Length: 87
Image 1 (cartoon, helix red, strand yellow):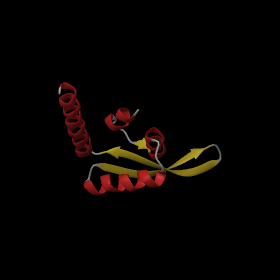
Image 2: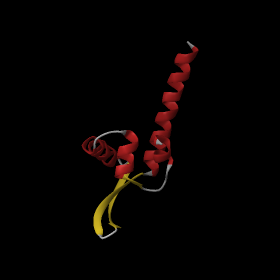
Image 3: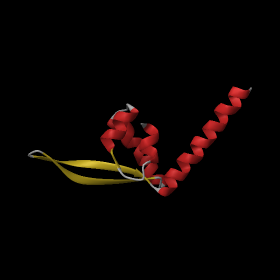
């Protein structure tokens, strides 16, 4: 699930990311703030209608720079785990 969220070029609901990672909304908010400040993520808010109730939905997406940084980090981690397995 985590890789799907990262690989997606489409925005994903904040709540879906929170559930997938199993963290609190305050923890995710803090980390999203870091990614926003670095230019690695975008955040938008939309109004959603569910039945008679309307509420705000926060959407998150990685920027192209964020996806590039993630792929580089994942490759580095893969390299580390391969090197450790070979030793």
